[in-house]
Image (tube, rainbow, N blue to C red; front, side, top):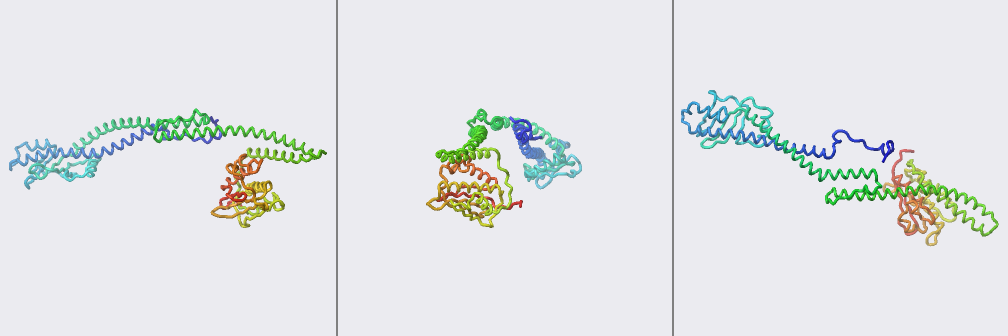
Amino acid sequence: MYEPGSPRHDLSISLPRGLTRLGLSAKLLLVTVLFVMLAEVLIYVPSIANFRRNWLNDRIAAAQVAALVLEGAPEDGLPEGSENRLLMGVGARAIAARVGGARRLLSLDSMPPPEVSRFVDLRHLDWWTSIREALAVLLAPATMPIRVVGEAVGGADFVEIVIDEAPLRRAMLKFSWSLLLISLLLTGLTALAVYIALNALIVGPIRQLAANVMEFEAEPENPQRIIAPSRRADEIGEAERALARMQGTLADELRTKKHLAELGLAVSKINHDLRNMLAAAQLMSDQLVETRDAKIRRFAPRLIATLGRAIEFCQATLAYGRAAEATPAIRQVALRQLVAEQAELLGLPDSKLLRFDNQVPAELAAACDPDQMARVLTNLMRNAVQALTQAGAEAGSRPLLTVAGAATNGSVTLRVIDNGPGVPLRAQANLFQAFRGSVTPGGTGLGLAVAAELVRLHGGTIELEPSSVGAVFRVSLPLRRSNVH
């Protein structure tokens, strides 16, 4: 829709790089896998600790059988070869049991058991210690045997064994590999199931929303591009219905504005030609004043005035549609002097039809563009003069135009007040809209529309205040310091 090099094309956002180039589905799958793997890690840690504990408990259980044998053995010991078979069956280098206060020992070596690197007491082993020691076995295996103490059965008080840690570590590694393979299988199946479900419930509809938005961007005036909402009752359904309403409203607005733009162009061309024809008619009507016919001479001034207003209307329409207002050149301006200058231009000080009262304090100043603010004041004051001269003042009093000013609540306020007939109710709804908010009969409403635009450029507000007599227009400008002097 947009050609390369056009302003819209120059403002386009470049595609992101790296990981963000992945689609929403791929990101969802990746995040699902990561979180499932994290869950498997959280499951693996206590599982490997529990495996080590059970493995040691199995050795203690076998040693308990040996303790029962020791308990029933004669004082001179077991028969030759029986001790070695017991130790090999348990998988220990030494077994010790305390029976009736006496300590009985079975050992593969004739010497006492060598020094051990770890001591594990299964009778008082908490989970945190079990997890820590299990990780230590995997990461830093012991080089010397370990000593394990557990509960005994029968008449023995406890059972103690000395074993090598290498078989335990091999069993733990085998268990870890098995658990890893099962975890990978479960992770893949879980991630696939979650991906399919979320892709169907969330990602797919969101992708359709995104595709519709891009299609609507390409042809916003085409009603066929408006999304057809589904019957979903969740947030995606609400988003689809909201998008459909927004697209419908926007499409209608764009079509209307396109028609208005085309109509405005046509009106501008018509106004241009009409102004030239009216100007020629006005030149010819000037000669009617010199005619000898009294009736023609009486109607000639009215005809000339009517043609003059028609020419002014054409010029104002062309000026309004030709250019936007410039950014204000802000500086500190004495408002009383500015009001006085506009009154002089309108001939108010010497007017015999109405009185003018400048009540703006001499010290009151505002940060504004003096030329643009002068136009605002001129438009408001001219409207008041026209209302007073055409309709007169209320209650038979002499027409009075007053401009007052004050600085309050962080703003500078100017009020243009007249004691005329006021603003009709039919004009108040569209008061500051061009061609729709005219106050005087035959007016265009451009003066108030231009004044409102200039005030908004200053960051201020303009409004019609409620009043029992006449009209009161209030202009508020932010109270700020100018950087330009």
